[in-house]
Length: 233
Image 1 (tube, helix red, strand yellow):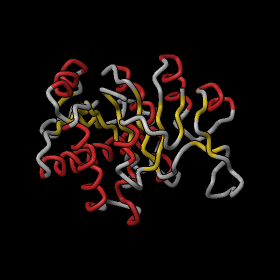
Image 2 (cartoon, helix red, strand yellow):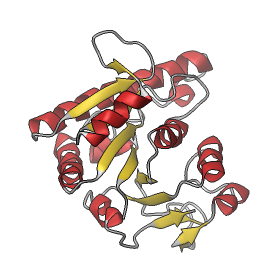
Image 3 (cartoon, helix red, strand yellow):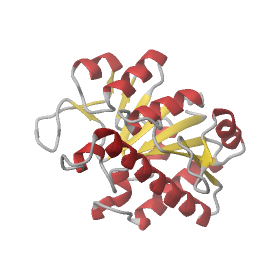
Image 4 (spheres, helix red, strand yellow):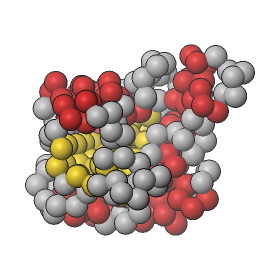
């Protein structure tokens, strides 16, 4: 269904049941599925959050100023991308890390043209460092990179299996949507992506597919056009 996609993966998902750090058995499963998608001709870029190491100002305990906290979060995403890139390579897939900030010897400086070249060559491109600016989340980075590389869709792989009317972990009466508009997501303040990311996707009409990463094979199901999770458009 989609030729080129941007997959957004939360940092917490990489930790799985461990909650922090990496569960490399789970990370390997995710990478194997992405590798299979690439072998089937899909071009894949990935943005990974940093929550398995650092959640910005939330982890600053009131002691770390917002700008510094956000920059620490950017570094956490770089660590995640480096680790996942190595897992891809061990599986025989070619993966490249591009960073939004200059970190000599760690990754290439982000370039739209170069990233598209890599994608067209069948390489997985991991976009590290968020947008490179504080006050913007990795959700916004995912929407931005998806638009820059002209992706067909954003695949939002989360810890929940779609978009709900309320937090299903708190409210057992919460209802999952099969489809929903960007406008309704914003109006109801639903926890899909942050408002900046959702507005960016809405203004540029790029669809968002929200699904659970607990079963990594869901990535292939979404790419095949199966109706799982929630479609935001």
